[in-house]
Length: 453
Image (cartoon, rainbow, N blue to C red):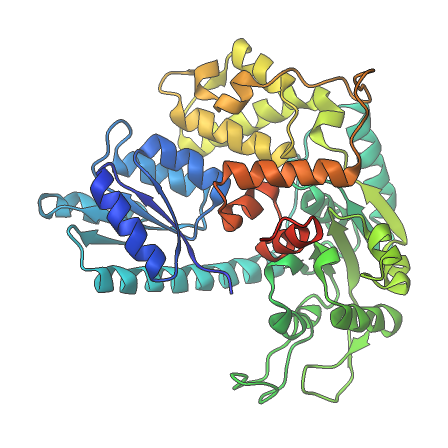
């Protein structure tokens, strides 16, 4: 079972080390940093569930760090750590959006209670966000940005496919924008006024997957004290988007095939046939045809899901869009922060030369962190991550070194996994987040590559 992730932010080295050790002993995955600047960088990459944030920090203070964390990772719950003389400021932090505060030195059992309450509220907020996404179909509007030939080809394909009711398999790397493509397909379809339901398959435990998708009857399993409709029922008349479809188990694949064939299913523990009218869109960053050949994915389901296959190009393949995207993100973030900052030409040059392994999502996080760290009106190279300042220029699309053979997909994946494990200092949860996959998926890949001890 995945351990809850915490980020501890405190400039007192002794307190930080002792508290991190005690929280780890209690079953939490703990990451610890000593400044607000480090915290802002870390939350964007690791997305912890709870942040324990000291109110008095060198450099960027606790309240400013709190605001930056909320902007970078709105899903994180923040508990402020404060001294007796700063209660008024701690209360002000709650007005800004912190979940709670604890006075140092804080008893461990009291802190553990606050952390558990924060995790529970985070779960409730996630459920509420899911319902909001279901009941308020998204309208991408003009936020899908690009002018490169690759981007225009993708938009033209979306415009042709959207009015149909065909199933669409959206492929592409993590962070390339597969969910945004699915939203745009729905928004351009005749179902646009009906629900758009997102199911993050990699985030659901196998024991919950079928219950979430198909619902359950009262008493179907331990804890099922009332009947619950499934997300297919919630999406009736609209669109359901199954993200990371490659993570679905064989048992759930069989049930999905039945829904595609008959538009009917049964609740877990039920025997009544339920009929729905739902368009199914799916997405994956995995090689599903290869999974079919290995017997990991049903061939008949793959053919049903891939009536139309749509590949979202990685950002490095449409490098001409980097400037447009960066300027768009600056405009959006300026409006959110109430600022009027711009990216300087030297910083833009670094953005253009980067290879963007994390694609559009990585670019957004880089721009957001730069605007937060920039104290003036112009973003300079020093406001960008060190990895961008020291990286070599990205090679032109399709170019390869004449004396260096191109690595195989397995070799490239193995190298990328090793880099993530090294960068996270062996922390599998953080490495999985860097790679944009679930911890379960990372564990499977480690096993496949023989990296498990």
